[in-house]
Length: 298
Image 1: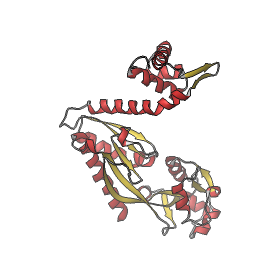
Image 2: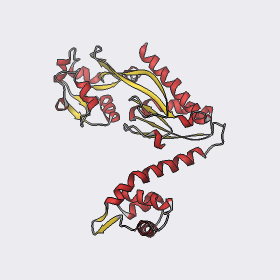
Image 3: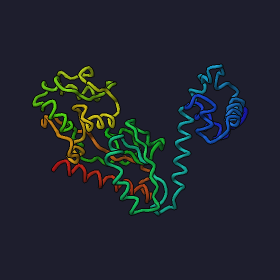
Image 4: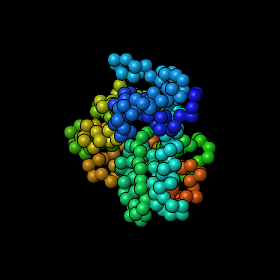
């Protein structure tokens, strides 16, 4: 290495890796394509090695570029966390808080909770990222996470809530057309909604559902939100949160004895626990989601 490259060059590298082209990276960063090209050239010169192989088909990352990517991603998430931390004065509930949650939790549960938090604290800004991937809080990809798995990392503040129950549901019109299954065996005669890619967690769930596997599903998608939308549209029968179905008059539960407990955790980095805005959001999520768990238990 001939020099200490500026962080902006690594940010550009990460954008090119994500978009696969100079033009795509330029759009992502709000820069011109020649500027992006100059950044790549400058970083290659500083590192003394090529980062991309240029051809008529575009840019192909070298082994060095691929090796640098996770480090550049850490730099990017850290820089974003730095800006969030600096966005509000110490001791005030003001500034930005980034929350990570699953698709279903983020769409079905969090909007009214975040609305109340914003009303109570008008200087609070929320960034909400929806993913079923567990964001790494230690790398500050998010400040607070709502997780369906127990956190295993150290240096985290974690609050375990009552689990969310999953059960089989369908649209009432579907059951009028197709009848109501009364046993697991009856499901074979229905249009089922389920996963596409099998995971260890799904395999463990299927051990409690003999006769069901990927081939049983008439609609396969790994998006839990898409599964829920298909259930509501009357496509067939699928698993969803009991709480949500109870609040939706078009949905009905079948096979009440079949239930799966989905863990629920609220987690944040321990370095944030004394910061007013992070603490308010963390405690607000815990209180509101505990209320949902209590509703489900009624």
